[in-house]
Length: 138
View 1 (cartoon, rainbow, N blue to C red):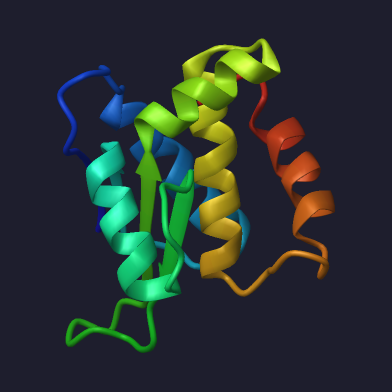
View 2 (view 1 turned 180 degrees about the vertical axis):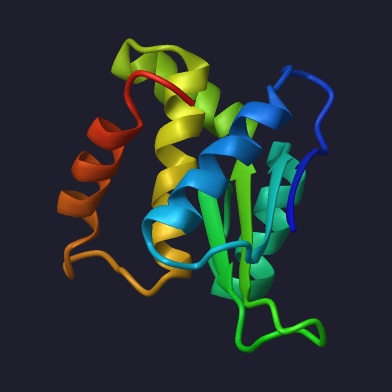
């Protein structure tokens, strides 16, 4: 099951659209119908998580927590993606594109981390390919 949560009140997020994006990504990479949670959060929450899990002070844009095994129902738990919407908003302004585009980029980035890609190991090139594949209909 793909679960998309908007846990911050400031910005509206099309949760269904991001659920469809994750479903397409899971299908593209051969994961069928995995368990994934995508949570859109505020600055305070992402800062606490960044400090707790990565030992870094301050907010970040996206955190990914890969799953480790299959659940009791045989489905693969790919993991959790946490995105800071305020941070995404700042980045979208700096990049001169919309918030939804930035949230899409961060969702793709987080998903690729869940399936094992990392910085310096092909994630940037794969992000470009995925964005091109997603254009024109999610």
